[in-house]
Image (tube, rainbow, N blue to C red):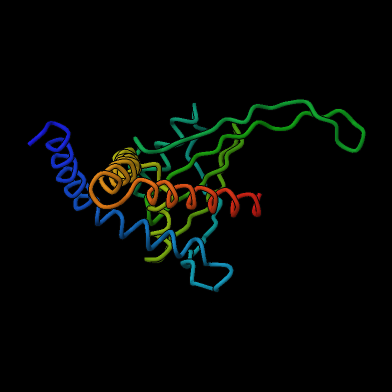
Length: 205
């Protein structure tokens, strides 16, 4: 067996194993992608989300956004290390023609694929506004599709799946051109797919 032939046999095996390993994620991303793509036009249920709002009293003013995020995570059962926060500093603006200074705010984001909470806090206050959301099964799967929870292992797994799709595309094209069909037909199919993509994208630009 020649070296190019051995390479193609090896590539076909790797292609098959990578496809099998990513089958479960492919089913998940394919199903949720369909639901997200057609939820408006075809009235496909997009998942229900229950929302609650509360103004929470604090025992003392938090010293930092990190301290507030840790306190809220422990209160609501989230992992503190997965909390994120943003600081919006005070800045001068004009309101009704008069110069004023906006109040600085802290925003804390907590979440899993099923639950999430968003807290808004004015530094120095003893209360914080919290909005909590809980998704049903479809909503949870859609959040997994978009990696909304910010869970690092899941993001890495989704990135690995994306890389696997790129590999399967390239290896599948190479295997087809070398093992299954004529090169002119392969070029025509690839060019047709690319032109269709560009045309549809241009119409929706």
